[in-house]
Image (cartoon, rainbow, N blue to C red):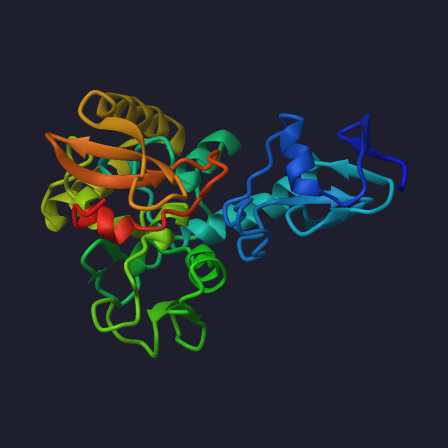
Length: 309
């Protein structure tokens, strides 16, 4: 067995087992590096470029780097900050921040949390609206105008659920996720497993029951919502105060949404998950990622929504 390797992280040396993923090692040392498209259960997808760090003097993705030699890694150099800022700006070019009135403002939004923790105050590139409408299925809906094209939903559909329904059409002038050969969710081969909504880092894939029900101001008409967002952004000098307000609103939601930990009894696997309810109505079924039986998977989410589990 190969001996441990010396990795210098921001000037401090560590002994690391060969074969360790660099991003996971960095996070294990409580060092912040943004990683919006990365999900430990899916592996490196390499689409967002937010996890760039300096490796032996060169900028590279931490998510796709395996520690196989002694390394000098820096996460705070000017080059790293410039690279990460560019990647974050490109994401906000595809995703409009309106966290306080977003149905997904529940503390789990990885775009919100990343921008806030990174300290982003202003975006360089203006958000570009896409010429697509929302698409609704029985259990979840897709909003192309909030999609950052990270590819998580495609990865989980193809490699975890192995249904191969989702792909990203990169040939379009404005790419988007499509179902089968560009049909609607309802007319596609989608089995309603809900894995895409589970791994989505934002509100692009969202449970239908969450929409308009999760927050205190999420049921506004689209016209009123757009006017409020525009007015608020013009009044605030930066994103910091907006993140603070949305964090407070997210905390308030904990009082109205009940989260019940439970185990599915439909079969013998023993999937563990949280059921989110409001006034006894199911809003969301969230797998417990730490569960050894299912991790990010719920084997019978469709049956849960139908009340069969």
